[in-house]
Image (tube, rainbow, N blue to C red; front, side, top):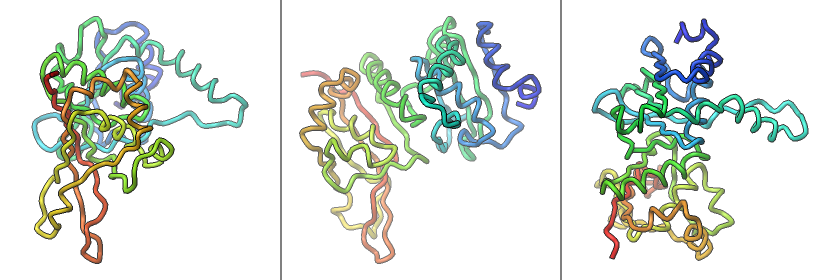
Length: 280
């Protein structure tokens, strides 16, 4: 990482990608950084742009243990008060990160601390990163609001072909259960997990399970449903991207804590597993 920064950091990575380097390895083992840390802003930019350009971004633990990472919102260029700055920013990012469309990426982190050890950029000419570099591409971390739908749609399509389940992890990104019926008007106001609830409207069956049953929680706390309005069902059924979820069974694992007065508190999604179901 220090060597990379001495050569220009972000501009050096861009230079290597523009030169069509086959593999670019960034060693972060000497640092104590998580993916959300400010020092990784520049590298996180590349990961987000790869994902937006139909690339693979596999976030993997270094060895089998506890999986957990804090994924923060992507950094944005600062608004300098220019009219039409949003358009200028999009054009800038399109040009600056153009070569990321030719790459996939893999992030390796320590399973206990969440510390990032390696970031690996691999040119697509080497093939699918799921085949050429060991990656659990059927597991998705919530990396970014703009890229989540595309990543999950792609994973679900491929899971149908391979008959493998797809897991979405929400270890550090909070995804709370809605307390009211999900109308189209309020689905976007429930936080970063809004896109997840649209996916849960389509599976043939959705089963809610507590991650661990507490002897202090009443039985009814383990039985949960999400109430959707007709407008939400109609919307997701019309969008082709969501269709791979139709022939699946969704298993939602959630956690729930007690409030100070001893009553069950809000439920938070831990993970969601989509299991392929044979078409009738």
